[in-house]
Length: 403
Image 1 (spheres, one colour):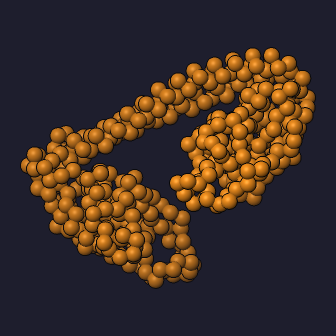
Image 2 (cartoon, one colour):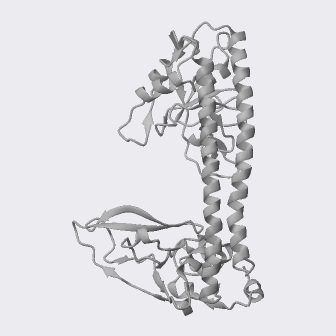
Image 3 (cartoon, helix red, strand yellow):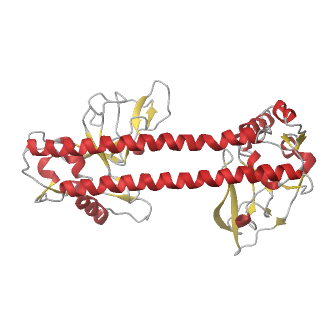
């Protein structure tokens, strides 16, 4: 926002330093004492609680305690909107000296007014402008932060507009929650239909009976994302049993044209390491990008197409029977990351002997269902985009005096 918007509303543009002041509630870390830590997310998302730290483990000689309604600034990332007003639930957390803290003059500045300002592009741009040319990683010096100007109507007007913003924000959150519930119901619906379509099939053999060779891990090349580098799939390229062609990095490392890790259109991939919910997800490579390498955290399944349709295996791997098998056989000491071995994949229960025509009939039915679900998801995504755009538009109006 420029000064023009504030002037249209008859509001002055005031330097932050005129309505706030620095505050330091210092504490020397004590070994054996656990300190709650505060962090600040980028782009105005707000403050959050980080993992606690023991006084013996921190490298900082002094910590700074925050209180409700403090303004906290990340020196390094203020240029990317890492500024927040501390909510009540984070009062009593601690930050290092990399996070200057300020308190508002409550006679002139409503903290919630400033809270919403931290979510605007005009504020982020000023933080960026004030960060350039400073030492280190474009850190913003506290005195430069205090030079940033914000629109400042009278307190009563600040509170009136904040109430309007928060009323709309609450409605947006309700709409977003309803949309998320609709997405979850859609996912449950297709999972139920897939299970129903495959439940009558008898898994009397293992997947190894329809593979021409043992599954092979790919190659996790060191990726530098050079413009002319070779694409290497990210693990996220195989998520939700859907192939995501945009999920790749690039490597400049030397490659061998005869290596096994090159993909060809129609190859079936399965993740061998991921979170418990995502390990064992599979997808079919659609040929893009090309050429392309699959990583070590995935396995390629070379299918005997004389016996089985690749798309049928892809759908079968989504079945309740297989998902339960994967859950039971995935290993790993970390509760957040599990792995499946080549042996586990080869021993996945599989219904051998189903005629190809019948497999293709099942695939056609499920593909049609997936297309319908995708149409619903596309509509839901458009709704989500509209919701995401609504609040920034409202903030723009609010700080121009048009709300």
